[in-house]
Amino acid sequence: MRGYNKLSKPLQQLFNKVHGRHLNAMGQEMRKEYSRDKITQLKVDPEERCIQVYFVNGEMFKYFNDLTWG
Image 1: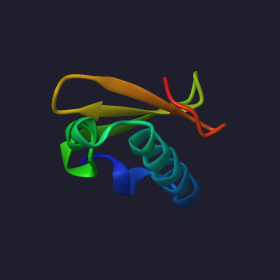
Image 2 (image 1 turned 90 degrees about the vertical axis):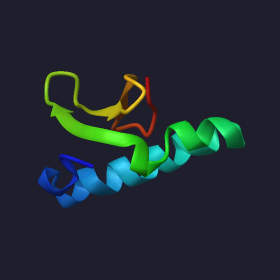
Image 3 (image 1 turned 120 degrees about the horizontal axis):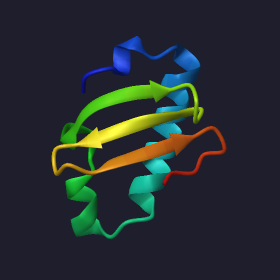
Image 4 (image 1 turned 45 degrees about the horizontal axis):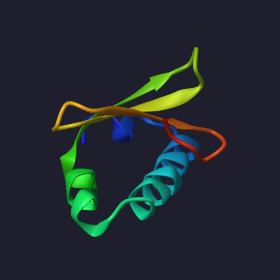
């Protein structure tokens, strides 16, 4: 996934934690759509203090410091 290696270690850890929680909130079939191999790009948004996570299906989620997403 593009952008992961550009994240600092703390941001990589944040991504890993939130992505795990995000997947756990989904059913088994839906998880297939949002697994790591379905992520096309990660971008840091300093204004919103989040990581923008882009998926091959065109969706984008924001992963926040409080371990939530939206």
